[in-house]
Image (cartoon, rainbow, N blue to C red):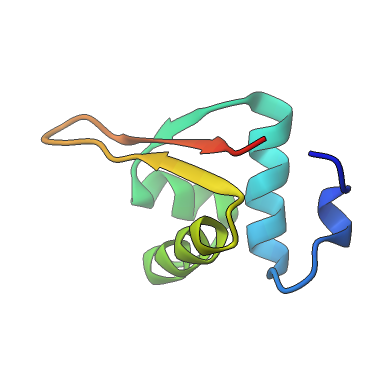
Length: 76
C-alpha cells in the first residue's frame, strides 16, 4: 500500500487494524466468528468493517461456501 494504513481517512481503528493484519500476514482465511475474536469485536461489527473496506476498495473477499471459510486479501 502506497499510503501508510494509519493515514487512511474515513476508516475505523478496527478496520485499519484488520488491514494491518492483512498487510503483515497476507491472505487471511476465516469465519466471521474468528475475525470477531481476532479484532475483539462483535460479529455485526465485523460485517460492517468488511463492507466498509470493500466499498473503499481496500479489501477483496473470496466468499466461502458450505464449510469452507471466506478468504480476505488486501487489494494492492
